[in-house]
Length: 125
Image 1 (cartoon, rainbow, N blue to C red):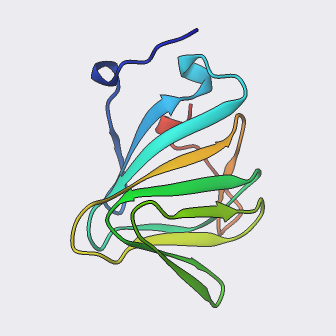
Image 2 (cartoon, rainbow, N blue to C red):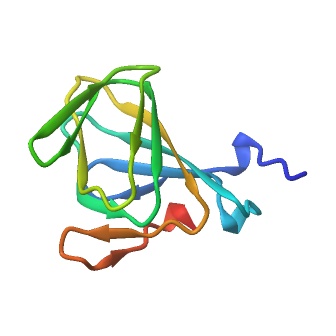
């Protein structure tokens, strides 16, 4: 078993008001699943992107809108969203406070920008 104590974790700031904290990733010893805590400031956004594998998002606090094409889904605390692999989507904090959520995905998931370029956020490693 591997224990990852909260005191040993830290948020990594990325553009557009985002912060990611690795909770269970390959670097931390996870081999089958990746779990990341994401925080986004009011007005912040994750630009349109896709993943190579399915992503599960569990909103812990705040309010976000997840967009995919013309579809818009508002999420509130305790809501869960399942994003199928290869689904272009973006996340916008549409509330007035920081939004926090968990990203849960299979280990080895890849991120791609809408340009097709692979993105490698440091908190996913």
